[in-house]
Length: 102
Image (cartoon, rainbow, N blue to C red; front, side, top):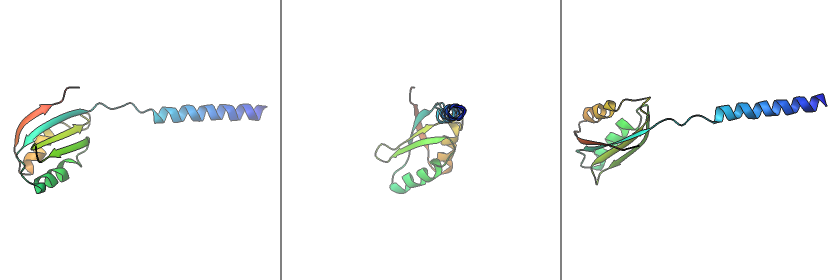
């Protein structure tokens, strides 16, 4: 009987510990869209290479048709000004900015 009780207690503790690790709080994200002077697929590839690996970037969409760069990011890990700096260092101009409401 003592073994059964010990096994039951260990099982409950294991489930509780797993739940604590599995239930990570969802981190806040923000989305910003920039109008950028891109004109070809090489521009898209270059910006994808420069922006997609920045720490805190969760999603990146670049539209050649609309000439926009949309970035979903974690503001606790990266400042928004880093995106403009990165785009400009790559040789492009940020012509306007639109922040999504959340």
